Image (cartoon, rainbow, N blue to C red; front, side, top):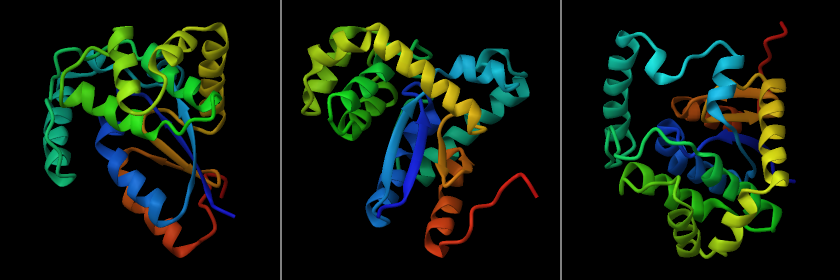
Length: 207
């Protein structure tokens, strides 16, 4: 039976974008089952003691820019450090992932395309037509999923993901949860792979 990873993320997260390809490589190598759980980051930050980017100390903001450049090189990516349409409200774009899952679709091709759309192509993922086009290009029924994304049911599922994130000690994006062990940030992917390779018992904060 495949091992499962709960994948908490938002399409507005640069770190989720930077780590996505490496994470999917790991999914393939270790035959993982991924439970995609888009979350609204602003609420998650506020409830766990974090701050939105523009409210962080300038020292932290400057360091973030250096880290983006380091990891851009490390992961072999080419993207804009300050894309034209970022930050943005990811509710509709994230909701398409939930709607796709609800309809029995694998959202990964859409995720790959949508992450690149923000950070490489500088597209506006608040625009429903843009999101629908990205979904169409990914082999999904774009118009249908965008319409469903705005529904009360998808809003409720989005909120449920937030509640589950808090219950699992998740406080940012991306977070990969393997058998209850939290790996925060794409820079923990190597540690996640170590855990998968070794098959060790999950570490816990309750020692």
